[in-house]
Image (tube, rainbow, N blue to C red; front, side, top):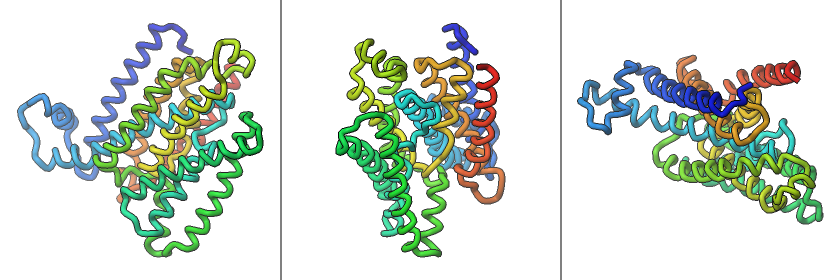
Length: 337
């Protein structure tokens, strides 16, 4: 476990260098291969370097692969930071970003848009609104019952998630089995194949703003991880600050799901992996989990594009890799403990 500030700084610097290299590799490898150093030159071509590559290489990298790599970085960071924040606020390391029904709400929103034949851009909008609506309902139920405990919020998430699953089942039943139903199922499994610069222009600012906010709040998330009396003794306004963390984490999750569909395990496993390296301090966990998750999702997307002739949904690969990884982390933590 890394405890010193110097060791942590070296680790972050090493991971950032690794992130750059895996981005370059991901941009190079595909059905149309591009030499690694040509890819690096194309990435830095805005500095005015002499063109030694073909126009086809530039189009493939800049217009086809770069948007999905940027999306992988943003979504990987977003889901991991949201997961670590949720786990801190709910004082439960088994909580994932969809605990309040965000993924279920976003899936219902996207499925509704597909059912009515809306464009891909409106699918994103409906998915985002569906995720926010689900969390709004989750936060409304405890307010109506007069119970503002964490347990009441989690139980509300279970209720809303179950209800939304029924709605999704109805939408699937009504959907055309030859065109709409496959689109809904594929969207549920997650993919970056439809990411464009126009979708990133809308999503990237929201993800960056929310990540920066949670990054600045990370020491207060440490306080929220304590019991209520200890947190209040540190000057923490429990309801206000807990709500802010939940809202920004929810927006991160909803935006991510609206771009890529449902990608499981990242928000659950990556914070655990970061804690295994640096301990339970969220000041260190949030940045580390975000970078590790970005590297992991780029690698998963690289596999999804190249393992077979057809693209494999990301959710399938993250499931195959995430479940054993989480089991390993649990066993590892037990041995350490």
